[in-house]
Length: 103
Image 1 (cartoon, rainbow, N blue to C red):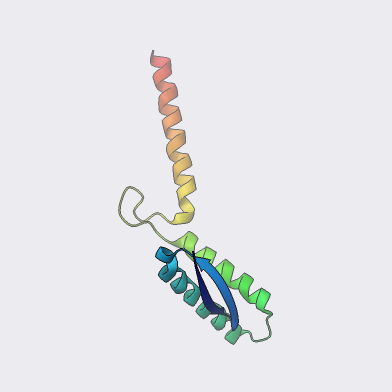
Image 2 (image 1 turned 135 degrees about the vertical axis):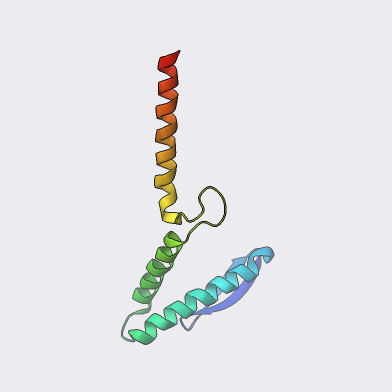
C-alpha cells in the first residue's frame, strides 16, 4: 500500500492505495474535488458536509445513469440491471416450470 496526499474541498487528506490503483484514485479525487468546488461556488454558504452529501448524490446519480457498452446489456443503464436480471430470472423460472409440466 502507498500513502497519497490529496486535497478535496481545500482539505488535505492522506489516503492509502495500491500502487496499481493510484492513477485511478487520483483521477477520482480530482473529479470529486471539481464537483464539490462547483457546488461550493454556486452555494457558498453551504457547509462542507452538505457539499459532500450533494456531491455524493450527484456522483451516485451519474453512476446509476451510465449505460453499458457492448454485449447483451448494451444501452442498459447501470441502475436498470437489477430489474433486467429479475425479468430474465422470472422468464427462466416460467420456462422451467412449463417444462416440468410436460414431463
